[in-house]
Length: 239
Image 1 (tube, rainbow, N blue to C red):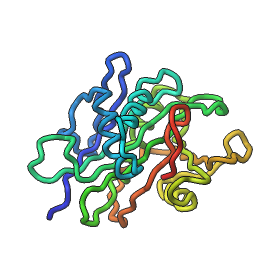
Image 2: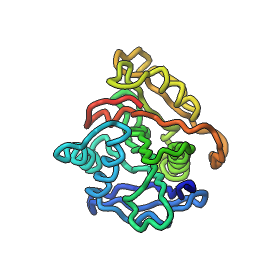
Image 3: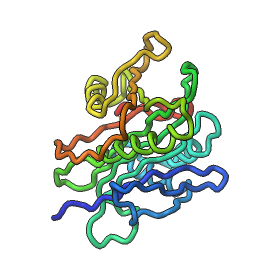
Image 4: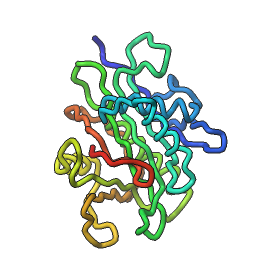
């Protein structure tokens, strides 16, 4: 079986219209993905992915509802969702992916930082084929870098990088693995508020110099289990 064909895009959330609009980058194919996705459909799509990466069965649509409420929240706003989805040849429905990476971007100060910064949450890989292939999370993370640098940093000169956090005592997985995993993407651990946190490790990636180039890596496929979800609206997971 041939490798899936991947398509990548940032979906920028429009709360008033209750939809997310597609933003593409020239380094990635995106034309198969819809130009707009209603927020309830986007919530269902991400929840479907999280059945694998978070082992969340979405019983009674609780996870879909949580994600929709998160997309619609007006404080600690989730501003975009990054998607990389892979398809077998001949597929006509964008929801019928066989491999995918996703993450959300939330603007937050965490009650400590002087200004709101972009925080990565819900980082997920949903692999539905047995074949060993490079993780689409690699493309998803690069897509996020590009969006932050070309859009968010232009909107606000106070945006200085990207941030994330990892649970110290996750229900599943090992935090040490996650800390090393994110270091491969340029993140470094830091003290939020200059003091130790009993629940989370905090990590930051500072952007310097020119825009990051597309990673044409052939690295071994790595599947993050779960990353911590939006602090203001949900329970916590590890990646």
